[in-house]
Length: 332
Ligand code: SF4
Image (tube, rainbow, N blue to C red; front, top):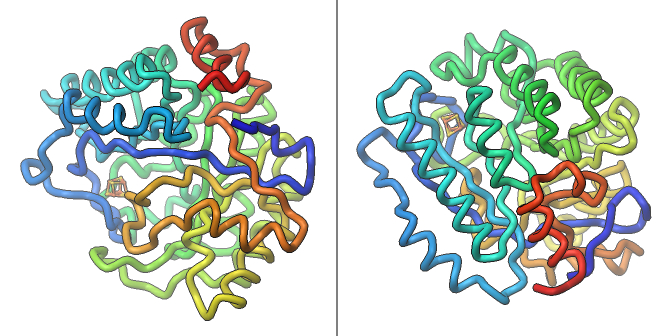
């Protein structure tokens, strides 16, 4: 696999060839814009055996990252331990089959995060927006979305030395001032620990099963946010945009120019490209060849990357370093 540090060449746009495993869709939060969650009891948990069957089919297909993405079981639930163990076991399985796990399953205890560091090359949690005002609206029934809890997760990841992806969600009722405050908070935490490898700038995009139903976040606003984010965030943090949420409106030339406008504003990564976007199931990911068709005539080069950036390889436990090294040298 051709792998690049996206910051070393300004004409390189990266993406991660990925596949998503969902341990469960059940979630004790009820974010009103959610198109993912299911009620407890209505979403059977993924078994390790089923996961293994899925992953074996992916071997030698170019997929590198296994994204473990889950709804949340309440921290005080008697089922939390089993939920966490399943997540750990799925990561361990993915590693044993030569893949690189990246887990994003909501806020964790310190001990849970420390354990998952042993089986993840990077981890993630969206900050979404820092303003507590959203707790009165879209996050009214979502205790996991308390901003201080999420900031603390970013801090713990830094203290534990975990390469981390975070991001903001735009268009859920926050103000413009909130955007800059949230970005500044990420910049500040990264200044302390140096562990944030990417920040996702995700435009809210209306889905079919949510209850929020608002207008999708406009492209002109997104371009403005990317430009300002590039000024606020340290240069060693890559700005990621989800191409399936940008590349949706209008005819083909219009859609292409939307993506290009985001790149020109400073986005340099397109995130995990997998068969299905589990969080935004109404917006399928474009195939990498389609992305190439759009961006390469404009002078950009699309390059696959690993879910851990090279400068963080030495942060990883020895077992993980060995698997990453095989991908770096193309022995996969
Ligand atoms: S957005 Fe995430 S935390 Fe909120 S309800 Fe959906 S799955 Fe749960």
